[in-house]
Length: 267
Image (cartoon, rainbow, N blue to C red):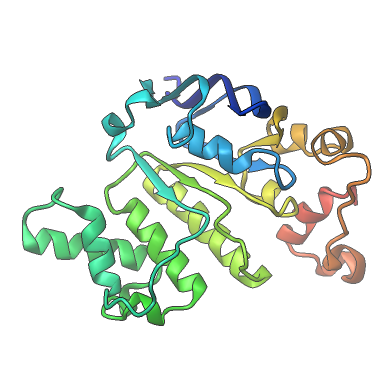
């Protein structure tokens, strides 16, 4: 049986004044896909996510599991969203548990089932032992995990991440990608993620969209991650520095992940 289209974008364009932000974007992904969107700063990556979620006015059509996003309220419970930044007052006395409780809203009335659900999603992101901590006491990486827990609390079918790793170190990035990939597989999620780090996308993505106001390339990692596509998205002066492991580790000591990462550079 053919998988359902999870996301379909038709002729999407965004214009602010006389400035074209995005022009004629067309692609679709299937249920269960992990799509990573790449492109330079100012290429329209965040605008694309916000347009898909009908936050930004746009021309064209967007469908999530066959439903138009023009009526985004009809997609409640289907869509999860983790924003690029989460600005809040760190002195505000709200706990991790309460943050998830608010996200669930009135969807679970039974108190025992509600508590079980909250602790379950926190366990999935490795934050169950922090349920009674105040949000303001957490590190940036821990807050990111709580945001993911909030996003999956209502059992969405698709989840959008708007460059969630800004300011996160390399070790934290790896942990994050592994967490999201695990959730994708265990919960049968469709994932759409904006990334600034092109050196890891081929490790996790099923599909990649390379943007620079237009859709430069879309497809499987091996189809998109080519020199000509990088030049189309980032310009001819763009260079990817070789990962240290590609340069320094003996071949026999490279892990499977190292080898995949090195393929990006033609090693």
